[in-house]
Amino acid sequence: MAKVTLKNITKVFDKNVTAVEEFSLDIADKEFIVLVGPSGCGKSTTLRMIAGLEEISGGELLIGDTPMNDVAPKDRNIAMVFQNYALYPHMTVYENMAFALKLRRESKETIDRKVRDAAKILDITDYLSRRPKALSGGQRQRVAIGRAIVRDPQVFLMDEPLSNLDAKLRNQMRAEIIKLRQRIDTTFIYVTHDQTEAMTLGDRIVIMKDGSIQQIGTPQEVFDHPSNLFVAGFIGSPQMNFFDAGLTLEGGVYAVSTCGAVFELPEAKQKALLDRDTPAQNVTLGVRPEHIAIAAEGAPVIDATVEVSEMMGSTVHLHMDAKGTGLVVVAATANMPKEARAGFVAGSPAAITFNCNEMHLFSKKDDLNLI
Image 1 (tube, rainbow, N blue to C red):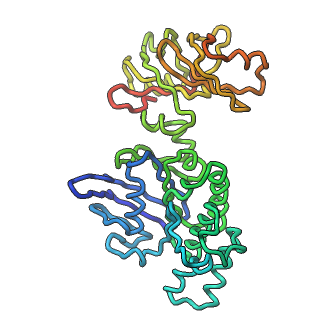
Image 2 (cartoon, one colour):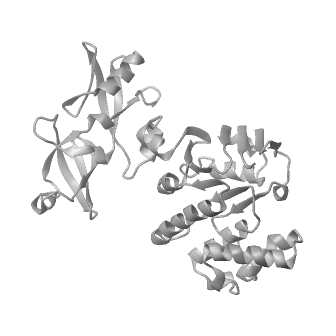
Image 3 (spheres, rainbow, N blue to C red):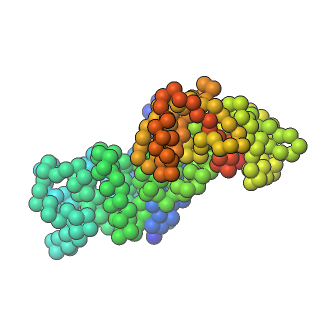
């Protein structure tokens, strides 16, 4: 069993600086969990506590059913891949990958088999006699992952392993990690500040801020139903647009007004608000860029002005101003006439509307999602 359980884990550094507070999470056997959040949110500290590289100030850590708070890192049967690779520069790739196995005093035959099997999985067999300085960043990262694989750990820990790579190589290595997970089928705990990595890799993602968990869920769940304003703004690229708005209730019907337009909410959102007996109030309205459209006839219209147009190929990103509120619209170009694309120039007017089924309403008091 390689399930991992964190019960109210807390980390307090000197001078009473709390890096992680009351962190609780059950990670299933063979699950791929991603901890994601901005720099300084406590995600790497949490991973280092699991690895045993940071002392746990409070709470309990279990791997399987065994308490691990006081177990030395070498006895936890975990393997960690670091951001900076942490390879020994004077050793060859083969020697780097074999090092931990030699410390275990495994036989030469076993070491050779494990190293070559891992090298084959990662397509680095041709580099086994090279030293790290003769490898590219992507190749070094494969070696670091290979060094972890040969240990056959219960749990893989990965601390921002792709952040030193360029964009193209990051995309390739993301795909390689997905393939690797399918081949070795063990528990992964992965830390990143990149929400694209989190969304594409994780079975579930844990979104953190200021040492606390903001939301836990599948990538689709946190995208479709962000629990609060922070999650809504962090997940999604380009990020969600936010508007000051008023939620009204007249004759048992809810509507949202913003930027001079009124949007009556669809049935499902009406029911959710009525079930909670939500009063009329000022709210923050959230709408993702892909859920804003150039207005059709008869739709509630918001007058806006194009400030910047970014042609992205299959889409165009329009940075607009609507009565002093900045927003981004993502419009598909596939069925858009060329003259329409050419019309999106700085200073040109545009009438926009929102997809009411995809609106999010956040409380002004506590930033929680009201729907």
